[in-house]
Image 1 (cartoon, rainbow, N blue to C red):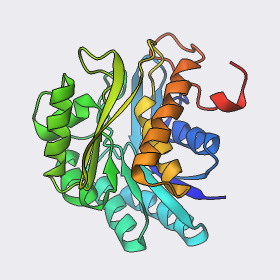
Image 2: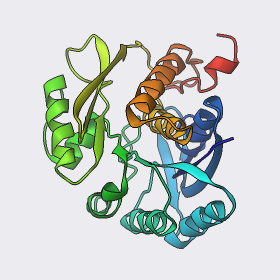
Image 3: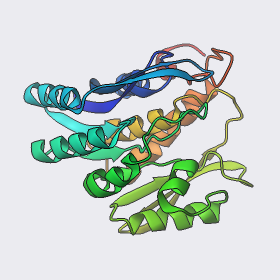
Length: 264
């Protein structure tokens, strides 16, 4: 059984973060391991508290997993602070871990901030050059590039701009783009541009969709798929997870990560 590692924050509501990543890994046939960066008190309505771990504690978790498992892929999610971004990047590079999927988590679905402002530069400087693909949503792509990202053309420009930052591949997720009847994600890499289209599921159960998409890509990479195959497979998986969302909570509810193992 192939192994993937998620380096991310914990979500007490179970819909995002480490919890979403491990559920996604299991659903896609990958054994999940984890390094927790922060503990959040949150539910479908918002984040009420965040306790950030020391960078050394994050490093020790990564080292412990890498010493005992053959890690097939790594996904980073909420890294919270610049020191954790730097420590995680240095450890991933030192241990030769990868392929690496970087989800630059900045804001929760509820709108609560999850990243210190000075950590953005650390992402650009330390983690992006190591990433096989980064997976920002429209708001994150806008923050990283300084460009407006509201339409498909905007997303295409942003993906290209992210490539100019030294990223091997940038996938700008388009679930919130204006004027699109489908959910369209834009990939820019050394081979050019690829659009990934899927049915747009009308639902308020969108908590953890970014975490789920990135960890699904990592799972497919751990299983030996090429990047484009991994993205297409992840997008198909997320579409069904949204379709079968259980309708829990009174805010932005979680998706159903194990939809293929349960009855609708």
